[in-house]
Length: 178
Image 1 (cartoon, rainbow, N blue to C red):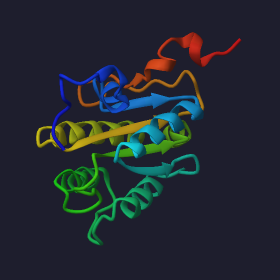
Image 2: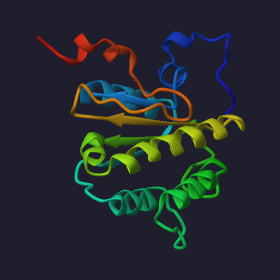
Image 3: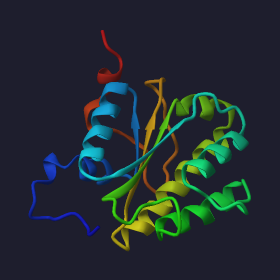
């Protein structure tokens, strides 16, 4: 897939709006996440969903992501190995389909995992952001959507870029209903 077309109406392109500011975006409301995922699926994206709400150890992350992205048996189940294998995913060796418009990794309940393993949660998002940037250099669209049940969730910048709320929940008031 090539880069986004600057002559098209990018304001209606959900994927462009999601990755323009950061390759990792936060969601609080499930309905907004579901709308984004539906749009992405309708436009040919491969969506890989991972429920992180029950992960209490870093090993849980590695087990789930290795299975979902079809990592090889020699996967080392540590953050360095995650970075290595995601590099292979960006070059379509496994886990990503060439016929898809792009790859979207979706974590739900990520705040619960981050509470148990804050360092691993942060580094995982940084790895994904870095690999998505690398993938973009070759026309492979890749991003990560992170759903959290805590409307005040904040992460340090990833890939030298901040983890931002999606457009509809950017304002704190949109995540704290009356």
